[in-house]
Image (cartoon, rainbow, N blue to C red):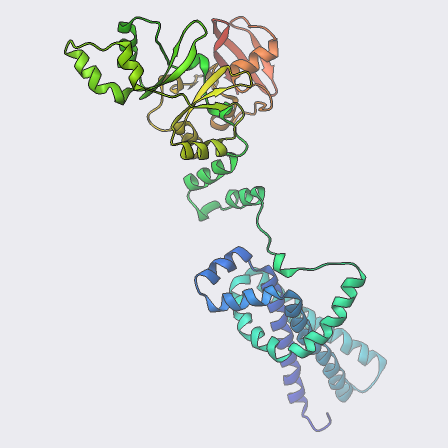
Length: 423
């Protein structure tokens, strides 16, 4: 290179460092691209995203062309620096060593570390930009890349390593998707984030967790006098009421109050409304087994066109009632219209403690009051207390469950009615 001026050689050296830096940027930015964001851009018709997606689908060839060009540029830079050093300072050992250190420093700073840091900070913009140049370059250098990859493939087979880049962007698991939504931060409203997280929990929550316990279910007893039945219907907060009869309180159906509204109006005009007329308005009971996941149950409600179901255990015993609204509340939060038994369940006292109903579910307490009750045993606070004492505790009894201090405020009819939870 005796005929090439030093200024030109330095210019070529700078160009080689820039080329090496470009391929460093391309490697880091494309490997750091968010695959799901890339898929979204592809669906929107973004040309650069389509090119980047095609390149990443053939990662072995993409890395082949990047590293081929990058290493060529780095090797050429090292050779050119040696030539320049020899021309300027001779062939001394210390001179060559200084030249080696200088070119190593230049490559690290200007062609490796700095470009890769920049690419890691802006992977989408730089990755898509680089795709416009890499895609045609890969087509031009394809024979060389193919030849090199023959040896790469042979080495991988020798090491018994199987690579399938078509499956590299595998589907997200539910836990991974939950983490993405949790980390979404300011990218989505808190309410939307809460609804999505609740949806993920539907597989882990069963009907037992959200049903109204059988002791709290408002029902009609056909053995009662007609006047008592009519009074219960008139004062009911619900549009559907379970109906039972007999000493065993066998559930015989669901009474839809709208079906008898006209009859009730007629009854108010001194026309008769007897139990036979009530029986005509009763629909068949829809039973579901205890332990059914909420996700499954909401599908069954849809398929069977039902809104209310009675939960039974393995012996067919009535355990509780669940409605479509109960499941929707688990997803989107409480509605303004709730039954009286579910209103006012939590009250904060002046000392910071919470006065809660014993029938409150542990999941609800953990969720709304940010507590940490165990969920692998009883489902209600009353059940947890009874399991702890193995008996019905007296009022004013204080005890500790985990890190929470509880005090029994009231017991009645063999159940704990109200409890105070201290922070």
